[in-house]
Image (tube, rainbow, N blue to C red; front, side, top):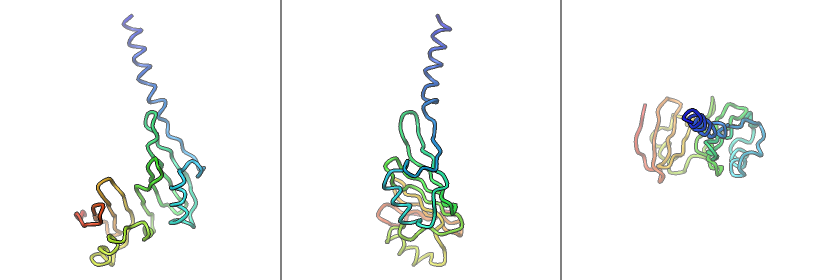
Length: 146
C-alpha cells in the first residue's frame, strides 16, 4: 500500500512538469494582437525568426520573440512588451518614454540605448557603454549601475 501511495504521489507531481511545455514556432498568429502591432510599428524591416510561448504549469506566462535582425523581445501574456534587447542596433526611440529620452539626451547624449526593460516599478535601460540606468514609472531617475 505504501509503495502504491508513493507511486501515485510521484505521478501526480509529474503532471505539472508535463503540462509546462513551452511551444516554439515561427507562427506570428500565436502572438496577441498588441504584440504583433508592436513588432510592425517598431521593427517593420524585421521578421520573426522564432517565438517561444512560455507556459508555467497550466498558465500562459508570456512570449519570447527573436527577430531576423537579432533583436530579442519579451511580451507578457496580454501582449505588452516587457523587454527589448537590440543586437548591434539601437532601441527605437518611440519605445522609450519622452521624459526618459529627455533625461538621456541631457546626461548621456553620446550613448545609445541597446536594451530596455519595463518592470512593475519602472524602466531599466542598457546603454552601449555598458551602463544601466534605472527610472521609475514617471520617468524619474533612480540610479546608475556599471
